Length: 144
Image (tube, rainbow, N blue to C red; front, side, top):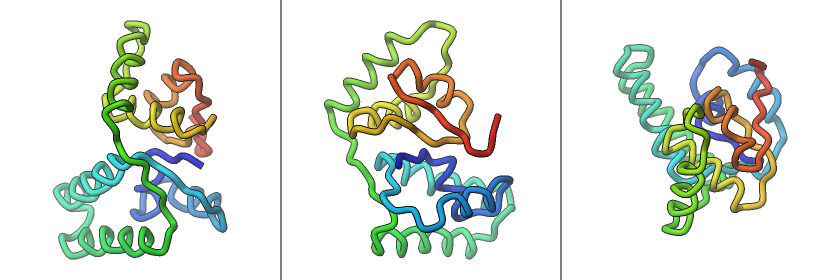
């Protein structure tokens, strides 16, 4: 199951949708993401600290919890390769001009596709809208 960072963040920070995501993921295994999602996760935690939604100490604790879960095998991170970046570039270039997609999200979609996933779970409307152009189904269990 491929989750982008928006869902992973909801597993560790109290945000709208956290309870629903945690209940939905309960007992599931094979939770996967591209490795750059780990960096996005830390950036999201830092944003919460900067915006004073988390204390520095709590932000550090959240990052440590992710590390514990990684060691326990909860998360599978796929490496970013030169070939993946090249493929993401080509796919991004081929998108219709009206499609908005961030570089990091193009990597998520390319990674999911190249690792055999047919569905990507995300709360990012732009990633979800672009998923079909990558041959993927984008799903947000939280709804539109």
